[in-house]
Structure formats: structure tokens, C-alpha cells
Image 1: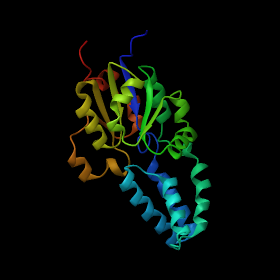
Image 2 (image 1 turned 120 degrees about the vertical axis):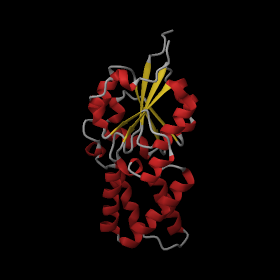
Image 3 (image 1 turned 60 degrees about the vertical axis):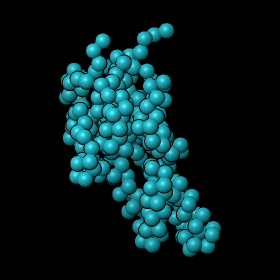
Image 4 (image 1 turned 180 degrees about the vertical axis):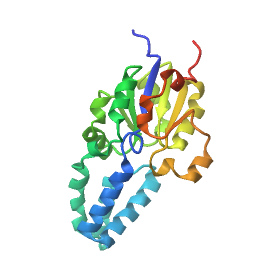
Length: 232
């Protein structure tokens, strides 16, 4: 048996490696232009309700619920069902943050890189594949409903002496840090609406390392990023 690596890098996707805010903006514009303000507003209301219920964004699940409303005579516009090809065929590779793939390549020279994200079992894998992230991490992808609650599973799949979690949500970083203590270094890229929310920023302790852009990891000394690693 081989011993586990010294470090494994865990990387979130939405607003960490990929500009999901721009994806949503594109989808909002598409729905409004193609299907009208009323249908778009109804979809987003269902989407937000489902996100509150599930704890993650489920675009196709919201579309399914929209269709159910139509079948029950709620007056939904069935033309909206044509949005599914827009989502499935969306050019996610064009929405990667600058130098995101270079960051993965550099981190891979120090230890295995693993995509660790929340999401559904259909659309989230599609997004990761079409963006090129799946291949960039050689298929090391974990998708959960609440990843911060699945740390035992993460460590079983990818054992290591130390972990580095890179995520745009301080809530996630704080929960993982509380569970793993010195075995985890938390890295916070200030990207996207979650990261820039002052209320969220004030509600949780700061990450071990904060950066402005994911590309900044190309210039971070790996001795700094593993500063909290346990002493052998």
C-alpha cells in the first residue's frame, strides 16, 4: 500500500473556478428575451424556493417543477421548457476565471487536485465536464448536497495528511475548518456575490489565506498555503 500524499487540494467550482454569476446573468437575459418577463419571473421564483428547500442551486429541478405547475393548470408557459438546451449546451469553458486551469496545473505539481462542489447529479457534472474542469483534475470530482457535512467521505476517497480547501463562501470554509482544525488550510478567493457580501463576511471568521482572484494562486508560495499543516 502507498502512503497518502502530504497534501490534497480541494477546489469549489461556482464563483471559485468558474464565474457562475455571469452564467446566471446570461440565463436571466435569455429567459427574458425568449419567453417574456412573466415566465422568467415565475421560473426564478420557483428556482429560489427550491434552492431554499434543497440548499443548492438546481436549475433543471426548477424547470421540472415549473412544468408540474403547468400540468396542474397553474398557467406556466410551456415554451420555457426550451431553456433546457440552453443550459445543457452552454459554453461553460468560456466562463472559467482567467488562469483557473493554470492554477489547477500548478497545484497538481504539489499534490492531487480534487473538485469538491455542491449540486445536483445531472447539471453540475455537465457543467464541470463542459468547462474542462473534469479533465483538468483527471476525473477526481466529488459532488454532494452539503459538502461541508461530508468530510469523512472526502477523506475516505482522497486520504492525505493535510488538505487545502479553496472556496468563495466563508460559511463553507469556516465549517470545514471547525471540523478539521489544523489539518485544513482554508483559502478564500473574493470573487462572486457571496464573497463580496459584507453581511456574510462579517458573520464568519476569516480564512487562513485570502486572495482577490483565483489566478493569484499562481504567485502564492506553497509554504504559505500549507502554513497550518500539522507537524509530523
